Image 1 (cartoon, helix red, strand yellow):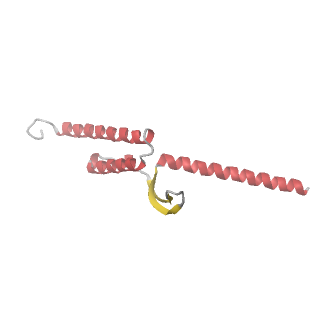
Image 2 (cartoon, helix red, strand yellow; image 1 turned 30 degrees about the vertical axis):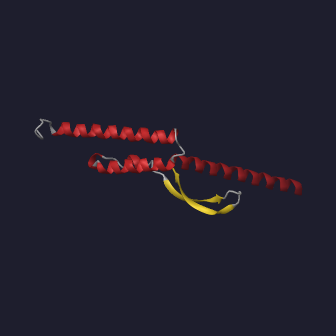
Image 3 (tube, one colour; image 1 turned 180 degrees about the vertical axis):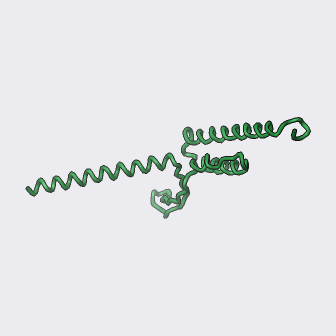
Length: 134
């Protein structure tokens, strides 16, 4: 027996695992909310995932950081024009954009589609040029 309250070590371990599972479910629900209901709140979602990862690290042997690692975004430094009141440009400002794994897949697919359409146009224009020569 462990401690004065009569709990066995197996019971303590099981209780810790249940607490960890509950904490993960809270993080998962919050992450899903940001992903589906508030996609414009990328920075807040990133902060949530960072905290989740830190919490998994604090769980020690019970934690699983790999659950969160795959969900973390890439931080991208971007520039956008600063527009003044008269509609002109006053230079550029840098900001951080977050690219989440599910968005990266969509971005790669769009790039692939654009390359495919470009190649088809190039091939069809080459065929048109050959037809005109004959």
